[in-house]
Image 1: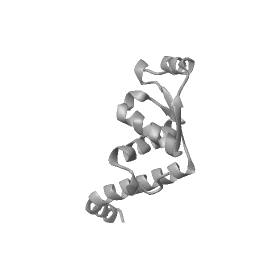
Image 2: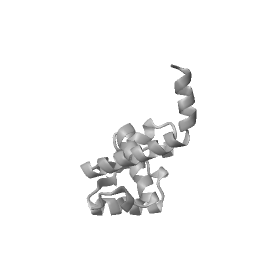
Image 3: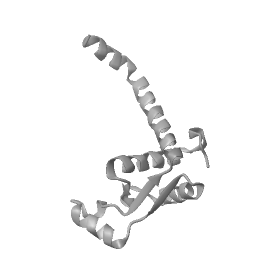
Length: 117
């Protein structure tokens, strides 16, 4: 199993963050309408590596969620669960992403922070 962020390509990192968002904000439910064929291949690769558990919801559950969703086609179709290693990687990615964003607006933030002191 890969354990270092630099061992993942851009699409793998993106999918890992997408799954992390699904876990945090949707209890692990995933809508495949937000995934393409490559994402599905990457997800299977993550499963084979032992990084995540990922699978399709039953037809009955998909239909139940579709009835509760405003946009009929956006309901969940799959589920995801992270191993501890996946959580660590996702946290590292979030931190890198946050640091890049903060660095890009650092001057503006510093100006705003000094105005409020």
